[in-house]
Amino acid sequence: MAKKTFSDIQAFISKHPWLDKWVLNKYTITTLIFGVFFLFVGDQCIVKQVKRARQERHIRRQIQESRRNIATYERELETLSHPDSLERYAREHYHMHAPNEDVYIVK
Image 1 (cartoon, helix red, strand yellow):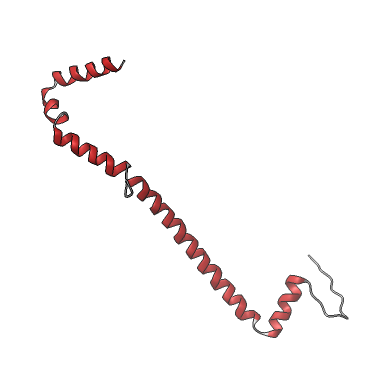
Image 2 (cartoon, helix red, strand yellow; image 1 turned 90 degrees about the vertical axis):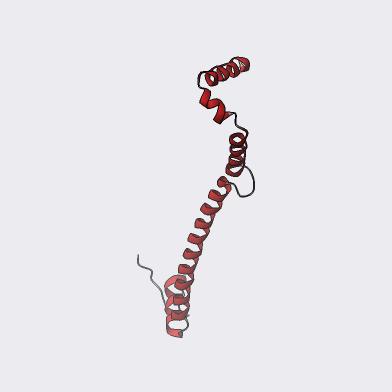
């Protein structure tokens, strides 16, 4: 099978003599080897750069979401710094009550 494929390639190149100059040229082959190396092999290949860019976008989104959460928590902390609002928050979220008080939860 490999012999037949190689002979087919030789026949095709012999039919088109201009291909012999370009395809079997040592500069073309060297350029193709370096091109493949830089595209798919090595530390700075295109595939790894695309993965890094995708990872960077994901991390930037997480940073933005974290900043929004921090801003929300800071506003909540500012609200809870007053004793009245702290008591209201404890009653609403943790169903706390005074010792001589009855609490009815209506939903």
